[in-house]
Length: 290
Image (cartoon, rainbow, N blue to C red):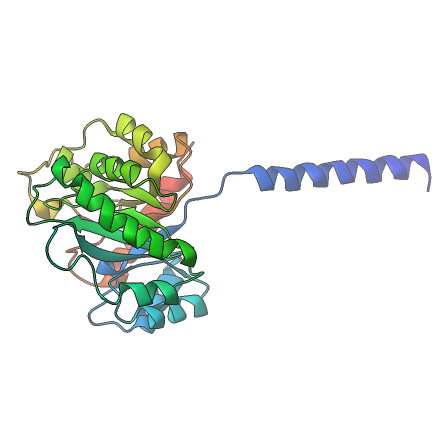
């Protein structure tokens, strides 16, 4: 091999190395899943829901409850999709049942599936955000976390208007006190807009980042707050006056690489139609990120 050929091969090898190294270090897009509030879960079969998500380009599903969960996972996995979360309610009241009696067995069945247990934390005794409920919350969430840990599962506390964990700050505060590596928080755009009026997003995100396991987004109008019209609070992505792109830019700047779910609760009309619109908006929004 002459010297010119050796130089050519060396240059080619260097260019190949630079290309693949660049690909390896390039940040990956956040997985994007749809919550089953938008996949007609009450009328569509597990197979039909999974098929729509695959055809439209979603990475998977956010599920609700424990019933039928294995069938749904099976249909998703057939299509190389993932169940990202399952939404569950827990109570911190000293008296009464704390969580679904089927949860311990379901946790065992979910071993290795990397499904987030998405907990909305409720109370009849304590008002929303009342820190007097913290010791009771810590006890029940630690109990679930310790069941989930051997199965490799994580817990994300889900802020929800009128729930005891109502604010992102509540979720972060409780996660800190629970002090388990597999317990974190959710940033839920629609509930944040409703409860906190869309204020102080960046400092809120910064404080939540060490605990932030999952985010939800949707189209919405600005300036709603608690007294705003609920009908404009959850829209297909790409609709409404609120700058969802600003949320995504903030998350990217802060280094958030976790999953992002599409909130669809209460949307009317054809599921495929609004999921198609939201996917188109997601691609446009993420393509515009710096």
